[in-house]
Length: 252
Image 1 (tube, helix red, strand yellow):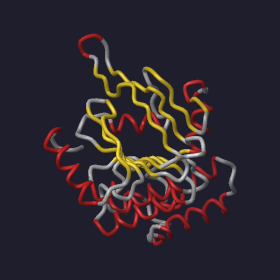
Image 2 (image 1 turned 60 degrees about the vertical axis):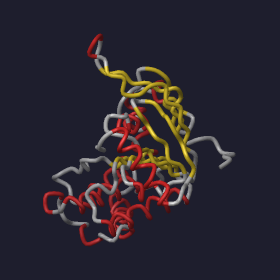
Image 3 (image 1 turned 90 degrees about the horizontal axis):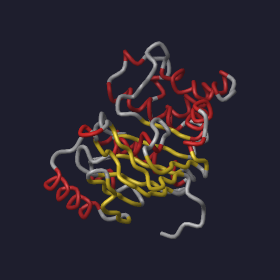
Image 4 (image 1 turned 180 degrees about the horizontal axis):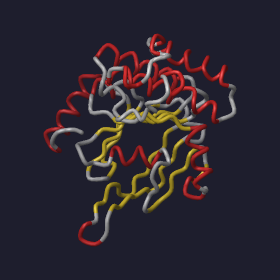
């Protein structure tokens, strides 16, 4: 695939080292990756390969030890913490494995909060939040609190929050992990549609059938990007995933 537009996300020779001396752990090693508008990239690899670290760096939730992370051409490392927070809030939608919903807010309030922080009126932000819930088929949860939801319902609310507004970059860490297969397909179709509309997306997954929704699949091993492939049929992806699982052990 040839891209004429600048990438929304550019990881430029990014490394991340945890600890010091003999206890050092190289979570990522000089990863170079671009994600363009309209593109969904799936990230696969065995447990401990650096997948979640890649996502946290891409979203500005952590800083690389080496290299640069650029979002829409802006190097996050050159921004103040306040400026980084503004980029995350306005340009980046992040789906966390543990949802990170605020217990004291309803589903609609959780989703609307980033828009209200951007200066959107509370009424308009709620309308956007309810529309996001409707897109995922869970508008009946609008006034329910997180503690009154199942894990799968919380996951879908978190996804709605990540997609609200004009998010140019959507990052998802196992977005269908708590969902049944039918609901998972619905979530992936929404994510796919958002990328088709012009956003850039990157998701970590260990399911080959989910990776089949992506335009590209990149494979990490020991913190290195070791392989990359364009969209394949599901059977081929299943074979690749099975091979990686045998070589690298279980996922997550």
